[in-house]
View (cartoon, rainbow, N blue to C red):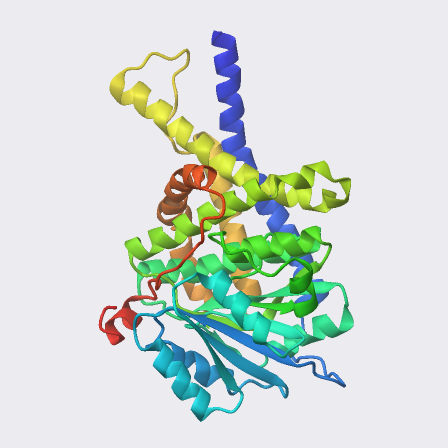
Length: 425
């Protein structure tokens, strides 16, 4: 029994150390290949003979203060054929009135009104059913889309008939606080970097919920968005890929977003992300029954391993606390919950390499990115702990959630400046 305990403990320790080390190299190599093959020196959207009609869907819930800025950018897009559909999902403020006003002001704007808050997926489904475009763009009501984004996305759909979805490149606007600065680096060094690598490996884990484009035919083939998923963006990605639609990442389709700058707002967001990821793993575990779905297996394994890594990490911490502070007898003496000896230095070096490389790549879109290198190095020490706690809470929530429960939404934390300008709503 003692030998089995020691062997199991050693395996957990090795996994906690080796998994992030391995994945960092996978992400770096994949991102470099993506950059030089598909991104480098390609700064102007390809010229197309025909521009397919786009329907831009904007789901809204209590967005009276943010919607105007978003629409100002949408009506000025550098694209000839598109419409904008604003969906009020049972807002309790003046969002519906604002939408009605915008419909009178702009010819290309239409409104859809839902009496009750039924969730983002329901709002998107309703808008999609009345849309006229063969291509669909979904964007959050507080996001600011770059003028050329539709052209970058349309090219993929025209050239490749099997492309079912394209995820854009969210960039952080609010960078005044520590949390804002760290998230600026996170969207570059973690989110964008991983999407590049996943695209090279063949399957993307998820489109970005804040900005993504879809072929309507693809959405129809999978029955649109499911209304009982906390993160509809991950779920729709998996539904499309299981139907063998190609999902791509387009870093030049830039979209500026507001991120949470309070611990409470960040905690709520990360709980939702973590719970949604576990729900998707639970829902789509049938991919193991079909050999044709084998290209999704690595994505499933990687995401499951990331959850297992968090649980393993907390297991080691709990065991160390029990032994150190409560004198619980164990066959071996546990080291503090920090990578010991040389392993900590190796992880720190690789982490710094990943951060620097990702900021170098993203500096093509934001020349000031390197100033956030100092802030992003705190990600593993402080910010990551929030994500790790969120996973621990989210796993049982997702596993015990009753099937069919509709996922409704509330207005998110959009940073201190936005909160102040809207009266703290």
